[in-house]
Each structure stands twice: as C-alpha cells, then as structure tokens.
Amino acid sequence: MFSNCLNRKSQFTFALIYLFVTSLATPAAAAEQFKFPLPHISGLKVTAGDTFVIPGASNSIAFRFRDGRIVVVGKDHGVWSIDGGRTWTKGPRGPMSKTVIDLGSGEILMFGSSSSARDDGRYELPVVRSIDNWQTQTDELALFNIPRATFCGGDDGARHSGMIAHHGVLQLKNDDLMITMYGNYQGDNELADAYPVEFNMRKYRTIVVFSSDRGKTWGHPVTVAYKRMLARGLDSDSSVISYRDVPAVTQEGFCEPDLTRAPNGDIICMMRSGGRIGVGNVPIFPTPMYASRSSDEGKTWTTPVQVADRGVCPYLVTLDNGIIVCSYARPGNWLIFSDDNGQTWKGEFMINTRDSYCKVLAVAPDKILTIYHADGKIKGTFFTVQKNTQ
Image 1 (cartoon, rainbow, N blue to C red):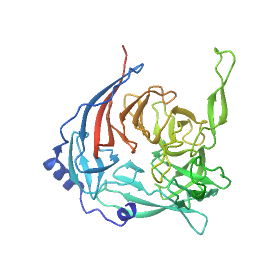
Image 2: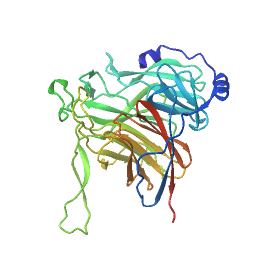
Image 3: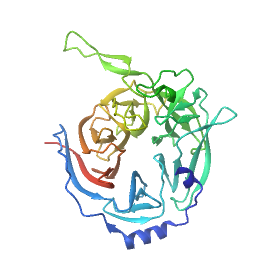
Image 4: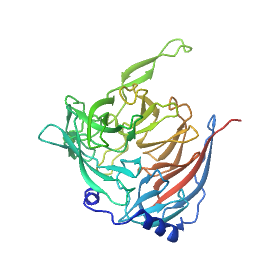
C-alpha cells in the first residue's frame, strides 16, 4: 500500500479540500454510549464522551495536522475532519503511514517502514515530502548511516535488510529531527521467545537517529533500549526502596517505539516488548510495555522501566494541560496516563476488546480522540482528561 502511495501525486489543493469538507461534511454515525467502566484515578478526572463510527474509514491509522485537520485512512481515500472529529467527509488520500510529522510552514514528511541496505554500507528509506500542506507530494529516498545495523526478522517470517521505522518521530529544540527505529545490530543474536526458529527473529533493540537537513540524511544512532530494564530491588527492609539494572522481561526485545515531549522538556519513548506471533491462529504472549526518557534531546536514555502489563503499538500525546496519554493494544485496547512528566503512569482502562492497533489524538487542551476497530467498523471515542484539584 505504501509503495502505491509513493507513486501517486496528489491533485488537490487546500482550498478545494476546505470547500469540499465544509460543504459536504456530515456528522459521524449516531453516537453510542461508551461501554466500559472508568476507574477512579488519583489526581485525574477522565470523562467519556460520544462513541461513533467514522464513516468510510478502513484503518485506525490517523494523522492530525498542525492546522487541526484530521485524516483517517479509508480503503482508497481519506476521511477528513476539520472540526476536531465532530464531522467527517470522504476526500483525497492523506498520509497513509504511521510515521508522519508536520514540521510547520506547510512541510510534512511521511516515512516508509523497512530500510534497505545499499552497496555503500548505508541504508535508504522511502519518504514522501510535501512543502504545501499536503496539496502535492514528492517521493524521496532518505539515507541512514547506522554502521552496526544488520538484517532483522519479522513476526511473520519476513526478512528486513535493515532497521524498521514504525511511528516515532520528533522535532528537537534546535529544529533537528529524531526518529525511532528498531531491529538488530551485528551481534544481537538472542532469539525472540516463542517464535519459530526458522524465522530467525532475534530480539530487537530500539534506537534513535538524527537529521539536521530536514530528513534527507540521518546518522549518529543512539540505543534507547536493549536487553536491560530497571527493577525494584528485593530489600529485606520494606521501607528501603532500591532499583537495579537487570535483564529485561521481553518476548521480542524492544520495538514499535513512539515519542512525545513531556511538559518539563524531557522526551519520553514508549516501547512494545511482545504481543503475538504474526502467523496463524496462535496465542497472544503479552509482555510489559516499557518507557525510557531523555533529558538531553536524545543523546542518552534512562534504563527502560515497565509501565503496563502489555502494549503493542503505543501512541503518545502530551496535552496542553500537562497530562500525557498513551494508547496501546493487545489483548484489548487501552489508555494510560501520566501527570508527572512521564515519571509514573496510572489509571489504565480498556476502551475496546479488539486486539488491533488503536490510536490517540489530542483534539483540545484537555480532550482526546481514540480511534480503533470495533464491530467490523472504525470507531472513535472522545475523552476529556483533566487534573482533579479537589
């Protein structure tokens, strides 16, 4: 699907989109009541709003532009909203990758997933660039200098010649870009648990790579997480708390990372560590979701800590009110929250029973929109997330 998108030029202008959307936009399907109980969360007040079908959407992949437009992937089109998700209309394709960033001034980058090895030792990754707010797009190949990278296996038995970009990309304070990738370095030989040996799927490491030329070339890789985690020590005196660097509990290593900037300026990286074998009707093997943080713009990272008992494809948003929200999946779709710059997480609750990936978007200073698969459709639910001062 991504290759088809790379070969296609958009033919619309923003003015036409605006006219089309404002003249034909229709409300989402009749609102439903949110089905799942909300927990009491110390220090927070979370309230469920409308649940509704997003008409014409076929996937939970969604993107919110800086100007507030939201687009969700449809079968051969985009489904657009210009009012924070209250109304939707069918329109041209929007970004169809999970890894997209709006750099401002109309410049938007959409990244492919699997990097390919080159004869010169570098790797290349397909990129779509727009400099006119997605009116038109140009296909590029970004070059990555990751000297220790090698091939990696996938959970479906596929072989990737280089590291994988999944969805975490961020603009740094100096306007450089940082993107997350996962895969293997030379010497990463520990096999992922419970996968067929013939997959040669070795436990992943998560890294970040940097670009100072608007995403054309990337380098200076830094490992975020591999093999180790921070765990509470087993002190005989329960009043004494210590932490130790120990072997990480993972099925797959660290993968599918996302990034957000916390209100205090730190960067939070949330990562999957297990979830499923990608072939056949087989059991789910959830292992913890982990978080690392950087206080120096990605140059160094803390040892990963466990955040939740599961979590594939975590998505992070930092609300204007200072609360960080993370959506994640498998088993089920979930939300979890932090009100202390990502130091601790609390209040996890289920929003849907499906195991498919889900998405969270910030649509107001204290409001999120979650997007997920349910009942054979793509649905959305609004939640208001506020600090409880009572």
